[in-house]
Amino acid sequence: MTSYERVKILLNKEIPDRMGLFEHFWPETLRDYWPKQGYPKGEKPEFYFDYDIIICGGWFNTEPFIGRREIIKETEEWWIIKDGRGATLKFWKNKSGTPEHIGFEVTTSEKWKEYREPLLEVNEERLGDLEEIKNALKIAREKKKFAMFGNMFVFELMRATIGDQNFLPALLLDPEWIKDFCQVYLDHYIKHYELLFQKVGLPDGFFLYEDFGYSNGPFCSPKTYEELIFPYEKAFVSFLKDYGLPVILHSCGDVRKVIPLIIDAGFDCLQPMEAKAGCNVIEIAKTYGRKISYMGNINVVPLSTNDPEKVREEIVPKLRELKRMRVPYFFHSDHSIPPTINLETYKYALQLFYENSWY
Image (cartoon, rainbow, N blue to C red; front, side, top):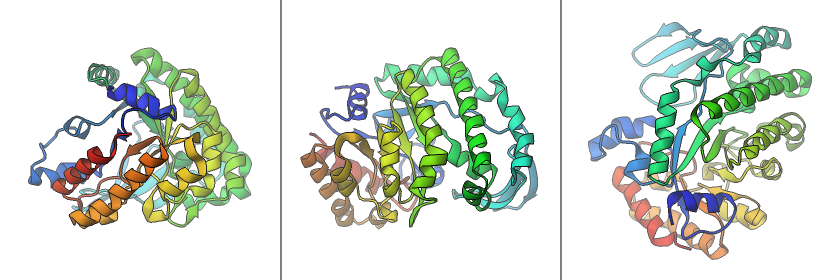
């Protein structure tokens, strides 16, 4: 069975020959740490580790003002940048992490009116290097891999444009602004993906990145999500399904209370089910069965000990129980592989996967 066939079956909530395999990494893991441990510098992990899925592009520029970027302050370790969303953010230079929110221009519905205007028109410049995307799709097809596009969507866009301290209260205090923001970006996405699909062809599926939870639960109540956010999630998923594309949702944190909405919106797979936030793929699968497929939940904390026994204790029981339950599952960490996990430890994790993943 090819990777393409395997992923297609899993995203249809059915059982193929074995579980799927995919992973995300913190950039410094592959860039700075693993090359010192024998990893070929510059090599793409999807090829080196023979993953079933290849991300081929699709992440276009969604800033209202393209090219607007001002460096406010810079040191050897970090820089403060004001971007095309009007957000001023502090980034580490040499390591990953959530940027510090310094300030935002779009803090009211009145200010939003200025920023929404550039988003109403289609602009092919937003799509980036079309030949690079075409080539990535070509390689994926030649290798019989499952080719996916990816992007964040309205909840993450509000975080990036308005900021958590501003948009979360606005969910209750100014819901009409939130609805307008979501509708403008829904239309923006549909128009630009219609154009992108026309220019480069279709992928096999779509990866949507929306962090609905933090360590202690969802950022707002399920009722608020249902009324203000998920109508737009459902509409965009429906648009993608019209093209025959299954959709994987990436959502960090504890999203257990939101899973019924995720399923109702039409998402085909939930990723990464963060163990550090209390998620457990076995318990989630017992509740929802094959209403959705599952990717992740391999806790990076025990893997970061680089103790083979602790790695085995984390991986093997989960895989064996998921296999016994006949659950459609992709092996993946509960977020991304950090540099604290050694290359040999990760290779051992993959060895355990192959030993225990055949249905």
